[in-house]
Length: 101
Image (tube, rainbow, N blue to C red; front, side):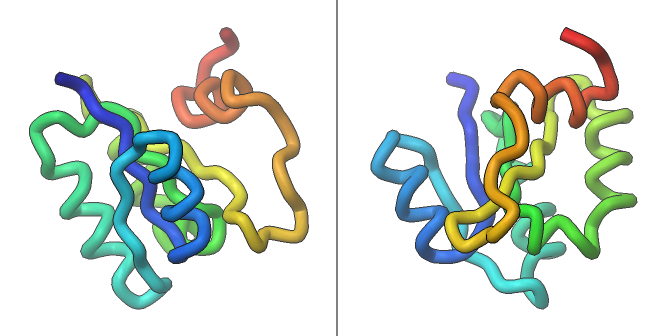
């Protein structure tokens, strides 16, 4: 079965878990290792990561999105992100894939 995973702060991960989405709590220091851990899972198809954790991982996220035939990484605001959501889920997926849907 294909799965969606969230990597973020405790509150964001907890919110996604209430919707049945697996999550990994991470800080900025451990974010690179948590990202590699999650994309290494055989069933990981969509990996959602909060903007604050993705900040230092832009290059790696672009590599995953361009080279992985099975996994896409989508950056979204966390629960405490003051900028909030600026688009729909489709907008975030389009941005991650670099295509217009």
